[in-house]
Structures are given as structure tokens and as C-alpha cells.
Length: 511
Image 1 (tube, rainbow, N blue to C red):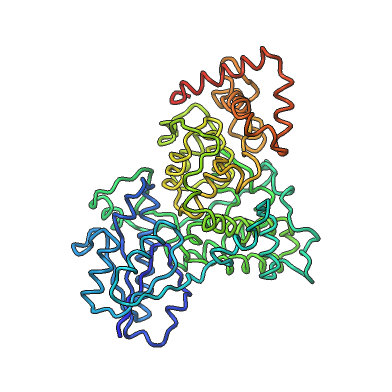
Image 2 (image 1 turned 30 degrees about the vertical axis):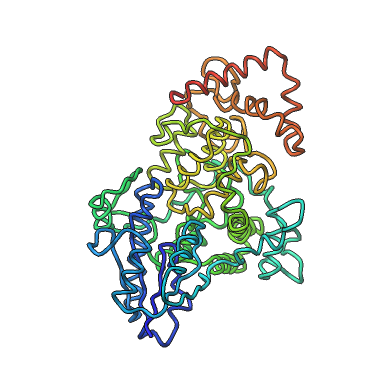
């Protein structure tokens, strides 16, 4: 019997049990670069290149294990650029008796492969990716029938289930969450390490992408590609983070700096989301580093990092599989405005947005506060259609796969889900950005002005947002103070603020 096993571009799990079978002589592995995947949305060139490079490295790994791999590159003549056609052609060409695949992490691909399997004339077997610490529907089972879904409750459950940072059923450090200690701006006294980058020559892949004619945006240095493209580089990046950054990660994870695009962030998300690293080994490595270096790494640092991996990341996946496909259509606030044109260039006079967007175009990366409280914050205040926002976020970041992107974007960032992911809209005026960054220094706009010449757009748009959505948001207990403050404004002040906001909204492409 000959078995065909499909490996998707985000299923690069070097430690999967598939590759530990002793009887591999009749197993063929299929990996495919396809226009079907490059073209379903507009992607950053580094995202396309990064996944192709990681896939090719993984195929080399399998070949070195002595496994039989069929790898279809983007420009191969026998590549139909369609998953169904490529699978059926391979089955016929190699007289395959059974088709096997791992559970996809995107709803879109889950439906596609199920339909393909149903049409095949041979048996199909489905396997787990052996990556996540929770099952697809674990979150649904935990919260179904309950009035409120809370990440904190899920996170504590995960800590207990996997005995992570636990001692006799109690959290190490005496409390579950040290988030209040994770919100400090960068100190001028703190030394910020250089980011660990790689110098991968991916020029052959870049030329293949150019030749195939797929559309893309963003920048790339194809002879010095900085992201990890195999497991060894991923482990090297993990080690660098542990040694150079973990000791300050928690404290400064919400900070932003115009001169430092990486700060103390691990940038492990691409390696994790492509599965070159597993969340368990990342967490285990971090805790081991903490145990060895307790004199340098406080509990708040390690807990803040662990929470991102086993709490927020797994929680987003749980929400995704519970609420899709309906989640992708939610627009609770009925926002309909167009994405500003400068989101594709970064050419805006708002320094915070210019820095964050240009950084994203250059590196295919921005850390979570830049995504949430700069770009996402502005788009929510500007009342942009979440459909357009989803496409932008899904395309621009190298780590963006729908299961983690759409829940963070449409849910956490845009409150389009009406409160499934977050209990309030995450919006702020210029005050938050000024407090947590140096973006406002030297900006064309003035952070302390609500209206008038050079008034920061965040300020009037912030109050206009609350005024516009008072019917839906006023009863939310977490934002009641905003309405109390707004109602203390004089009628004249309210009028000036709303007028300023409308002026900016009507001329949004020239801000």
C-alpha cells in the first residue's frame, strides 16, 4: 500500500510523529507552493518568501531522513496552482491507496481539504498537528453555556492542566497574573539589545516569486533575509531571546520606541506559527532560564511571557474554532469607512503611525502594542470597515495566519465581535501613545491638543468615537468613566471636538 501525506506550509513540525515511523518505504510526502495560497489576499513579500524558504528547508530535512518527498515549486510546469488538482494528480500518478493530512489551522483550508477528501475514491485519515497545548474545541467546552468568556479563566486552566509555573496547585509568586507590572515605558537607563537577525540568501525564491507574477507589497533584502527559515535558526532565535531579552520582556512588553523596532520582544511568532518551534518547548525553555537565573529574571517577566504563549495564543485559537465562520462577518459597530491609502506606504504626518507602518513594510513585523494601540486604535477610531482591516493585517505580517490574525484584529483590536474576545474597545487618545513611546516627540501634530491647528487626530477621534457609539457602549462598565468625562465637557467644547474629528475623517488620506 502507498500512502500520500500532505504537509501544508504552516505544518513544519520537525518533531511530528509522522517522521518517526519505522515503516516509511511506502509513504510519499507532498508539499506545494501555490498561487491559490499567494493570491487569496495581498501578502507582504517577506511573508511569501519566508514561508516558501521554510517549506523548502523542511523538505530538505525530510529528504535527509530518507523520506520520499514530492515538492512542487511555484513555477513547476506540473504544478496546477490548485490544491485539489495537485492532490488528485499525485494520487493518480503514484497509484496512491490512502490519503492522509494533518488538521489545518485555517477554517478556509479545513473546508477545502474535507471536500477534497470526500471526493476521493480512496480512504482518508486525519491527524493532529501535535503542536498546540489545547484542542480545537477545548475553549468552547470550557465556556459553553456561561455568560462570560474570559482569557484569564482559560489561562489559569491551562496553567493547572499543564503544571506550568505551579507549586502545590498554587501559582508560583502567589498570584496568577503580573500584568500591572508589564506596562512600563522604556527607561533611558535601560540597555536595549540588538535584535537577532539572520542573513539567509533567498534570492532564488524571490526570483521565483517575481517570475510567477503574483502580487505583493512591502520590502525585502533577498540576499540577507532576516527571519529564521529552519528549526536550527528558530532554536538559535529562542536561545538569544532567553539570554538577552527575557529579563526585561515583561516590564517593557507594552513599550514602543521609534529607534528600536524589536525592543525586548522574541519575534518567535513566525517560527511558532509555522510550527518550526512548539509552544511547549518555548515555555519549557523560558521556565528553565528563569529557574537558573532567578537573580536576574523576576516572576513578572517569566509570567508575562508564558501568558502570551499558553494564554493569549491558545485562547485566540480556541475562539477561532468556536466562532468561525460567523466571526469573520461580525461588524458590531457597523463601521464602513475605507482604509486610509497611506496604510500601504506609511506616508502620514502622524509619527506613531508612520513609524509603525514603515517598520511593518520593512520588516513584516510590529509587536502587539503597535498593532493594537497604534494602527488598530487609529482604524477603530476612524471607523474603518473591519473587512479591509482584516485583509491588511493578514497580509502585512509574516506571522499572520487567519486563526491568530482575525481573532486579534476583528475581535481584540476592532471590537467588531461586540465583546467576545475583549470586554471593551481598546481605544485611547494621544495620551497613552505619548506615555508609552517617544513617537510624539517631534511629531507634526501636538499630543496635548484636542482641536485647532495641528491637534493630534487621536484626541478628537477618540471622543467622536464614544459620542457616535453611545447607544452601544455607554452601559459598558469598563468604559463608563469615558462617558462621565465626555458629559462634563461644555456644549461648545463638544462641538469643537466633533467638528475637528469630522474634518480629519473627511480628509483622512491627507493626515
